[in-house]
Length: 233
Image (cartoon, rainbow, N blue to C red; front, top):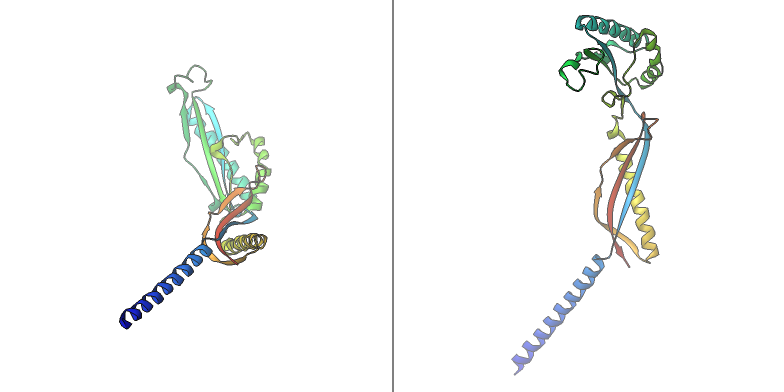
């Protein structure tokens, strides 16, 4: 009889212990489910530090040899124009000449005034941003030499780049994380809770865009972090 009583007591204690553990686990799980998800933003405006400028010009005619000679002369003018304005020879390159024969196009053959249109591109690639901008402002001077640039063609648009993103990434990530934490703390205070540890965190991609259409040499850099925090009583 005593043996049964002893076993019953042991069983009862075991059941109580299991119940307590189960209760604590449930409470803990409930607490773990209390989270807040926030986003943190960091933005910068920076100046571009590299520019690619395709300087494109065309010549039309019926004689390829004559067209080629004119293009050569115009290239020399542009070459001198760049060198005189502080650009090194290593910072620009001449492309091969692109020849369009209108007689081979049934839609253009009757309308074309000349048989050939030739396009030559001189590509300037430099980190001398201010000098490049100054030259762009003076490109109208080339018209005095009969050189009209194809600026309206999307293929020859100016491209301003920012190449030092890695230099500012750490501080931008830190700022975005702090902003996320501030938002989480505010939410916790409003819900009369305390902010706990981070449950999960992810960093969005860095984006680099022109600030606006008129100033492509000023870039807006943006990154967003997504963080989940536990909330505690």
